[in-house]
Image 1 (tube, helix red, strand yellow):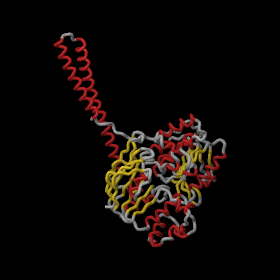
Image 2: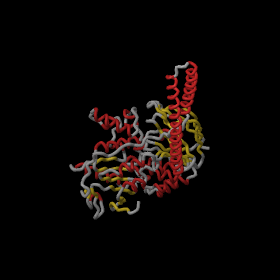
Image 3: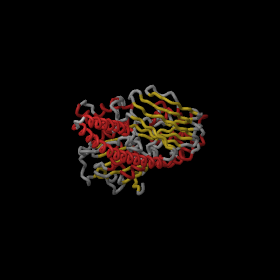
Length: 497
């Protein structure tokens, strides 16, 4: 036994909402426990609390967590600022006793990271997103560990199949947060689902002892069964109430039109019985099966987009390493894949900068590092409406509510929002700007598995052109018309993806 969690509840005191409600679970050696849920529902907070206490000041924790592990390893969602300025040499060789260097070099080779770079003076903050994740994985996995706590380990990684295999087969327990549906399908043996219902006023925490596909199917069936049962019970109850209302109307009519005292007493007694029966019916109404609650789906649409003519060429052969005879037209949807560090994000940024110069194109850009576009100290409302115009603010508030932002969250500093909420904010900015060309760097990376279908559909139905860097296999299959692999020689068409 590595973790015993009993009746754990986590309350966000600043926002006056519950994130985790009455969670009880035991985690054993070899368990692969996935924490899933919508953006901002407290997944990272729960992961960190399971790792260690105390909780942050803004969280109130009830219940107990008994930790029986001695060598936990934590991989955060983003590289800590304290490590960003370190060189690779310092990161790997300052404390040599901590690491098994046979494993360091083996994992570097398996993850496609040049082992000669491990002793270089290159700073960590100069690495690509995928490379940063790789070196954290290499160091984390090469140290002593009896349990891993991983926050979005599949984000930006080109070696997903390797990571899936490692997590699925390693002897240690792994507790992880992930939005990647394929990764969840192939790794998780237990599920913790954090839900926030009724506009985030009601927390619901579910535990599933099994894999993710089985959980999805069971959840779907339970939802449909409860929904059907609630409808059937309500239908039968309404039939009973209709009959009762007719009887009550008849007794009331008799009571009004009866002038004989003896008959009047009998009718009054009957009315008392009818009213007593009505009180019982009202009690039965409370005991009816309730219609199942579900989290509100994301409501966001690209509207009033003026797409460019379908045959208009945005990129021609030879531009930005585009292969010979290849063109990017104004309504194409292109995916770009490739090894970490090959330059995918750099290429996308160059294309965006070139498109900004063109007067007939309105480009929108979603970078991999959200801080490139999001000012940390501003609130979502200030970011979307810098002029303070009331009509614009009202429109923005409506959209933010449809994206499940609470009234409190729209006034939080952007730096206090979760990665998924920041992604939603950038996505909303693209919609409000009415861009007719989208340049997206890992656009689905921080959206929950339950939001992913809506996100893919949103981009699939987008009337303009898309160039997207992505490691998300579902996204590439559903959204992109063509996929290219970026190599040192340029972009190479990929037939099967």
